[in-house]
Image 1 (cartoon, rainbow, N blue to C red):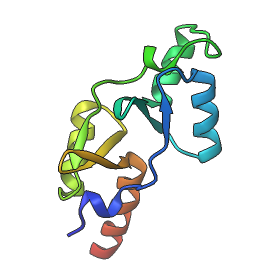
Image 2: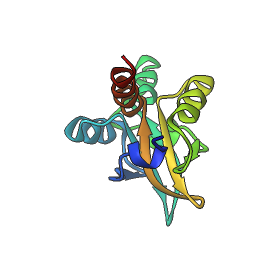
Image 3: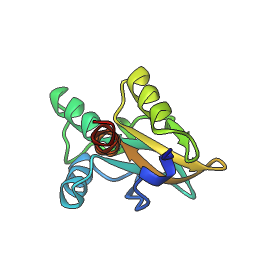
Length: 129
């Protein structure tokens, strides 16, 4: 059976806390991703997602002036890389999120998105059919 570590994206896309929402949205668009880890010093302080940015726009925040630190999700929800995709799916569903940071012994080593899980479960369902 597959593990979260096999499905995750290992390329961590990162911004700093002072990055504006406009800059973060541009980076997500350019990289075709839905989330960015937010760094403070040597640690990650949160995660900014496309949903966070949409919420900020709907609340009339100035995306050119508002920093990600004001709308990011924190603390970062994580899943260990050795766990199953089923566990990650259930965690995402229960927490109503679409991105999880993946850890190896507590250190963030990747990101797992709902899109990654959909691709995996699509493959698995074809194997069963």
